Length: 73
Image 1 (spheres, one colour):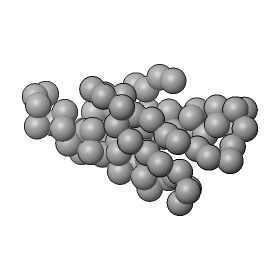
Image 2: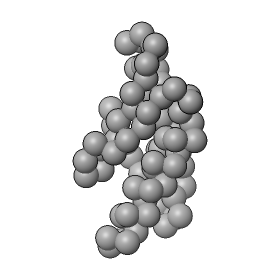
Image 3: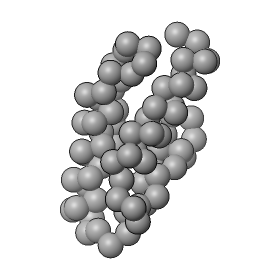
Image 4: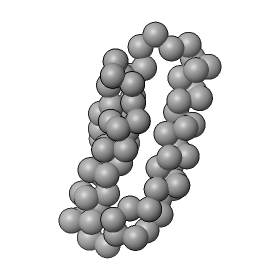
């Protein structure tokens, strides 16, 4: 779909993460199409649950280009 659509998709993913994160969390792009979340004050188990929730959120979102994405942890 081209670089412009890819860039817009990355921005939409970032907006989803920022919108759904707690105020003390930090979302960022790690590189390429990889993102990270810093989740202070959460146990490893709770962080895993948050990561799964975000993965499902991305997969369930219809992006502006009309396509669905897959996401992995």
